[in-house]
Amino acid sequence: MTHDLLQQLRVEPGSAPRLDKRDPDVRIGAKNKHEGLELLRAQVERLSALQTRLAAEATRAVLVILQGMDASGKDGTIRHVFTGVNPQGCRVVSFDVPTPTELAHDYLWRVQVQCPARGEIAIFNRSHYEDVVAVRVRGLVPKQVWKRRYEHIRGFERMLVDEGTTVLKLFLHVSRDEQGQRLQERLDNPEKRWKFRVGDLDDRRLWDEYMTAYEDAIHQTSTDWAPWYVVPADHNWVRNLAVGEILVDALERLDPQLPKPDPGLDGVEVS
Ligand code: AMP
Ligand code: MG
Image (cartoon, rainbow, N blue to C red):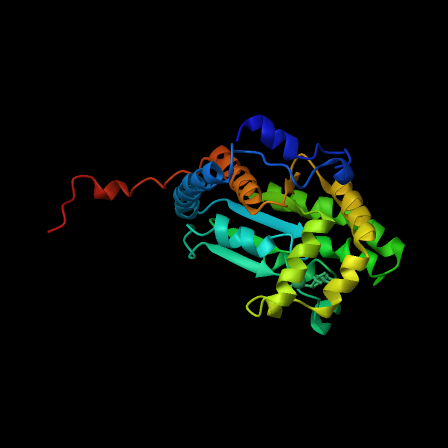
């Protein structure tokens, strides 16, 4: 995948993502699925090496935010792209419907505490973006409350970046048809049925409202310091390859360095 393709997936700060104009079904990054899987394997190895250095350096952190409708592939992305990453130094956090204790605080309270420590990669499976998307669509707080949150979020992420965290935000863009097929498969397959919640169908009925909410949220919060990427997600291999590329590119730009060895070690031999 070339740098140009990464630029295409990136939402320019201040501009609308135009989700309706982006095709979730495109096959990009490789000639075909076979080649895509080969390339992913190389990315997984590269990520593993880069993460080892990030952890050893222990001065900077990476936060990967995954958003998307049900069955857009958030879990699959984590399984496939992070499969080679050392679990020591990588943390996955899933944000569910807030608990009463969480609701008793501001919406960023539970988020801040889960942000990665120096040297760590944290992957958010859903995030504070639910507080301007699901919360908006389900009418959980009035408009004047969620509208103000875009500004808080821009500021919050600016603070994270200023303090040494790279913030990558990925919207897994699946089509309504593909989601329908995947949800049906979840219902029919006893191994997958546990993932299905009745509420998922309510959300599916509100598809257009969700797309509008995502359109606005991405538009309002794609910034120079914490850009959004819209990842075509109808084909798992395209999605994995695109996410792998975004991560490898970000880590290569960070170029984490191994700490200098203790000078006292010069000339020392293990007896
Ligand atoms: P899943 O990730 O599919 O297991 O489901 C998690 C559910 O929690 C989704 O329906 C989300 O919309 C919901 N959720 C997560 N965070 C929030 C939030 N801050 N407010 C309301 N719903 C949320
Ligand atoms: Mg779900």
